Amino acid sequence: MTPTIRSPSPKARVGEYNDATHAEDASALIIGEHGYKHRLLDSRVMPPFITPTRYALSRRIRTRDSDICFSSYPKSGSTWLSYIIFLLTDSASARDTIQSSLIWVESSWTYLRSEAEVEAASEPRVFKSHMPYDMALGGVPAENKGRYIYIARNPKDVVTSYYRFESGKSWTGFYDGGWEHWLGMFVDGKVQRGDWFHHVLSWWEASQRAENILFVKYEDLKRDTTAEIRRIAEFLGKSQLTEERMTEIESKIGFEEMKKDKFSSLGDVKEFNQFFRKGEIGSWKDQFTVRQSEMFDQLCEERMSGSGLHFDYE
Ligand SMILES: Nc1ncnc2c1ncn2[C@@H]1O[C@H](COP(=O)(O)OS(=O)(=O)O)[C@@H](OP(=O)(O)O)[C@H]1O
Image 1: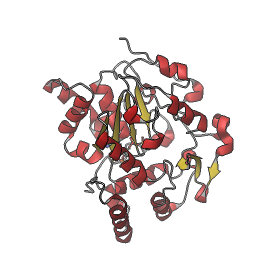
Image 2: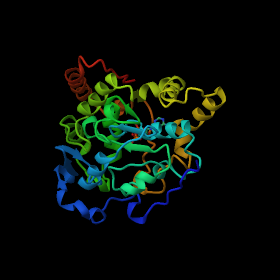
Image 3: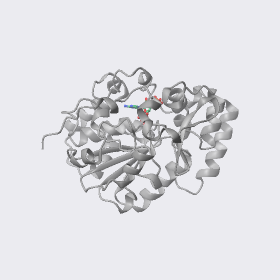
């Protein structure tokens, strides 16, 4: 099948967030402390570019057997995962960038806007989301057709990466609260996408029960890239990967390679120029004080004990 090249409509271009281009739902915007702009959807804190209209559409999507839907809490390696998916399914080559190849229904920044466009998209349709399990694309993933992949990362690196990326950005209302304040908001589940523990554990628990949900950890992908790509490939029904193809895929998805590559780059939007920041395990050590680290470890113990889910922090 010939892949469809999607030309972005001017309205849908990813770029600086502006309330005027999201006027359909402007009334629901909230400005929090230090100018932190957000919306509440199903009582969860969400970015302003996730409008109620688009969220409702994302819940209405009827998934198909060939669909691949991935989700993550922000800053957990989802762009990395998406490139791996495109390479494994051979659907990357004819398209111009990751962003224009993905279908991100919940966001106003998606290149495919209408239900009809999503219906007509070439297969496999690769859907991106940053929603917790109970707000997932298509309703209840475990009862749906298609395959879901969730990528998670240790929360200390997530909150660090998130802080570095989100401060001063248009879609956070140029938030300027500083690190201590940000960490407090993260712990209270008040940053965009809500409570990290709920988000990750909701997918983790679902993945233990449902065969169509694969749970991937950023740290495993970083440490044992070959084995993790093979696990993802098997889940996607692509277990016949040759050594040659495997080497080719690995050569493209390294941090430095993706940073340079035109397909994986996020284009020329100035606000995204910090996106490929470090790509490491343990960069939280440059951000947390000892006291903050101990407080956070205690919180992780309280919120995650008994879940069977563990992360590497260095
Ligand atoms: N190839 C590769 N290898 C290792 N790490 C990588 C790679 N590509 C992206 N990254 C790092 O992933 C972090 C961004 O995560 P997301 O893509 O989920 O971000 S977003 O929420 O969609 O904006 C962000 O992490 P930090 O560097 O810690 O900020 C990216 O640098």
